[in-house]
Length: 245
Image (cartoon, rainbow, N blue to C red; front, side, top):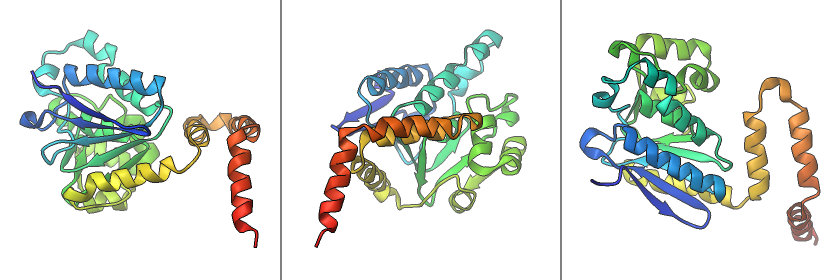
């Protein structure tokens, strides 16, 4: 059996390719298991994660053949929910590079990323209600944070699928790139992240994820730690020395 997730590791990033092109990268239990393994690796050694699909598709959704046989106990286990939450909570940024279809669970995987870019042929939506279920792996709470409550309601209640231009206009994707340039664009984002202090990046992600009632105290505590960091002194000294005539 082929690996459902191909992983390329580098010093400062990991590229994970959803690799079930024969079923449009449908997310099955094997892929979820591999995502958990990947999260464990990135929790132990934080690096930027790039998620991308194979065969011109990000992910067509959860594997319907498996989903059809699941019952109430399976729903309460939150099989996809917990995996996507773990991805969202990774210490370093997650970049979703979306080509082609990102539907249902595939869209929810993209919503769990910090940054999302796509191609002109990207198509994103949540058609779950047409299959007799709801989008229960993050869409009902992450999508309103990304596009606002009214637009999230429109997508989730109608099952509408956005094209690439609409996804950019709604803020669901930040930029579009030709398919053969998509991975390069994701690496360019990762390169920019890599130029910055990793601890400051991690703390920024923590602040962004904090609940509303935690601000501004969370920023002040994180900043206090950074103010004592030797890397802060090194970077600011280098900046000042470059500015001197």
